[in-house]
Image (cartoon, rainbow, N blue to C red):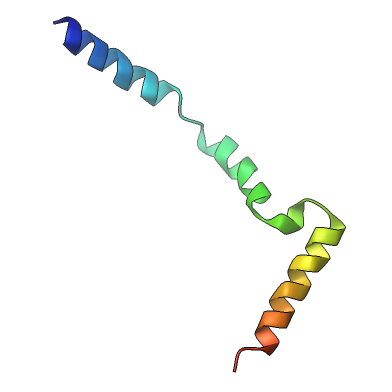
Length: 56
């Protein structure tokens, strides 16, 4: 009985500790290096342009 209660409490806490979709969408912009600064944006753009010119 105690083990079952611990499992239920674990699953309930796990469900409650997840981030909402709005927060996750707000954080997704930080996965792109170009969002941090103008210099990194230029570097990212040059990297993509350079790799496109070397594709066969």
